Every structure is written in C-alpha cells, then in structure tokens.
Image 1: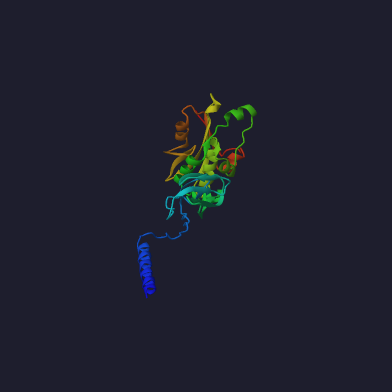
Image 2: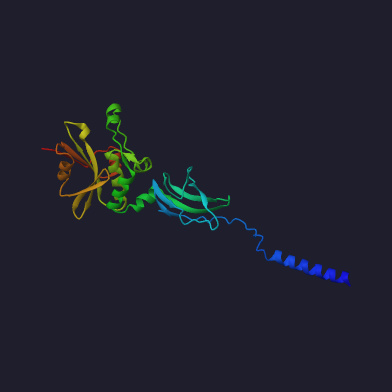
Length: 268
C-alpha cells in the first residue's frame, strides 16, 4: 500500500512540475519566409520624337517585410542605370521595353517593364503641324553649327536634306530654313527659303524660312518665329541693315539643289 501511495505522490509532483514548465512563457517562434519586393514605376513621357528625354520614377515600388537596396534599369538601347529616380535620353527611333529590377535586403527580386516609343522622321514632321510646334521642336532639338569656314576652305557648300538634318540634329542657318520649309510645306503652308547677301562681308549672309499667315509674312530664323512683316524688304532689313540683295527660292528642294531662285532683288 505504501508503494502505491508513493507512486501517486510521485505522479502528482511530476504533473505539477510539468505544469510549471508549460507556464513559463517560453514559446518557439514560427518560421517565416522573405517576401519579394514589388516593382512599379512611371515614365514621362512614354512617347515622342528623338532625342527623347524620359523621367523614370520608381518611388511607388515597395518591400512589405524589408528594404529595397537596389534599383537596376535596363533601357534596352545599350544603356543601363541605377537609382529610384533618373532621366534617360533615347537618341534613336524605335520601341524600347525598359526593364526595372528591384533587389531587397534579403536578396529577393522583382521586375517590371514599360514600353517607350521614339518616333521616326515621318512621324515627327506629321506631329509638327503648326509653326509654333515646329519652332519649339527645332529650338530644343537642332543645334546651330556654322558651315561658313568649311565653305571658304573647300569651296563646297553641301545642303543637307530634311531627313539628314533630323538625324544629325545640327545645321547652319540654311539647314534650319530647309527643315522648317519642308515641314511647313508638308502641312500646307506657303513657305519659301529667303536668303540675303552682304557684298562687303560674305560671312554676314543669312537664310530663313518665310511663311504666310493672315496675309502677313513671318519667318523661322534658326528655329525662332519672328515677325510679322509687311514685305520681303522689311525682312531683309531686319536680318541685316547692310543687305545687298535677297533671293527667294520657292521650295526647300530647289534651294537644296542650288537651283536658280524665283526672284532676285538688288538693293538700290
């Protein structure tokens, strides 16, 4: 009987001991896995003409259980970048599936894509359907480059085509005029190439595109809209008070070919 009571007491002591251990508050934490970050970005603008500068912003990306430590950009034009926000210039026409890849502090990644479309020459001139749009585009995208010294040295004055000017994004006053005239003619404007000469200094010669609006004359002068003017002579004086003669070419194509102008006016 004593042995029986001994085992009962031993069982109760063991139960109390185990109960005390269970109430100690020590628990085993659950095992959790790392969550991948979520990639997201905006692009502004998503389309336009070359060269097209686009602002990329990935600030809406997030990592619910950690920190994003890397923003890796692949612009698909041979260039890459890094950072939460950045600008990139697309220099050539085409469609680019820009890829953003995020990496978090535990090595997990996520990616997303947006398409940027850079317009062609034809798409560009189609979009420049007013003199104001044309002027704004030229001032932003075409760099002035004088050809006078080359002409004096070689005796050769090559006039680029509108397509070549679009691709090179540079030109002298004559090539600004050629491009402006071609675009305005495409959209139905009456446009001409207008050139002045200064007998005392051939380097002071100049060319602009003249177009008519409300029976007045306006010019696109190295990309800038100027005017209105009443007469061609007013334009000549505005360009250089010492002008000797002015010549009018009825289209960019005849001027490019150095054809004989429709009209030559000599100063009295």
